Length: 333
Image 1 (cartoon, one colour):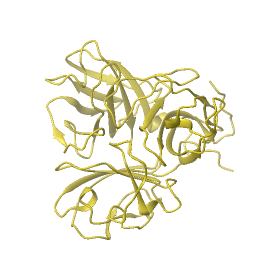
Image 2 (cartoon, one colour):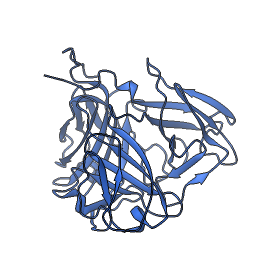
Image 3 (cartoon, helix red, strand yellow):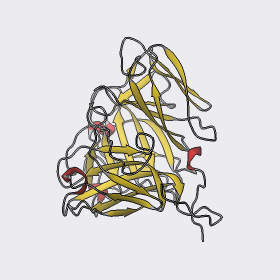
Image 4 (cartoon, helix red, strand yellow):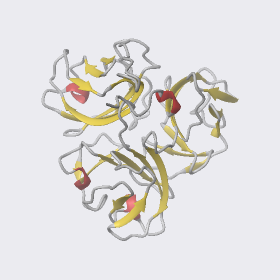
């Protein structure tokens, strides 16, 4: 029996905290193995600045903002290089990337079919039912798509969103509940080789350019599921099969912010510090969650995270598998 596909999650995902120096610095990841990231998601923790996403397909110096609908920006600052074990970051006229006296978090993913992560750039043709190839060799569980050349929302697919997730959409840049849509995914489920888009401008305007972030689940490394809240401080336990390093949650049946917790901003239980992909808010506390050797447990009654009978989707990435491929168990923190 295989316990995990990936014994060392740091090969493919790492969170990094750093302090701005007001100039240019090389940020080295903390893992005990080098990882060159392909997606760097930066957020200032200490001040209300934007969520900035840089990827190696679009290229350094180009970024999109998850908390608004802006087109892709090309800037002489931000992430200026994807290095062999981290990235270079430059402070320019904006204070959002590396300002002296500010603190930041960077969530870093390496593109790899082994880890179930693919970055796809494509050009729309305006035709409902168009297909876009990907390189996962597995069915995507999560797809986040952003129009690059002009303003538009971040269309988001999650395989556990509803009983027919291909008929619905969430938007990463808003706190909106799940909405029905036949123009986003053309009511067509993704396959192990392609995903399908409708004729919505946010997915497939003729001649427009797009970037898609795709993830497929890998045992012991990533989990993309759902849970129902119980409204109790002794909250729902969510089994992932690993000790989480990163958890992003969204309530789907009502309005609520997307929330990200990680094992670097909170190094022991409970995790209680959240950042929000859909707002510029800095670190915010009172989101108490225990991260365990095989999942996470809600310890808070807030309706955005654990409302009684409320439904939620999540994406989680591992710090360590529950049991390694050689049968060695992981202990809780």
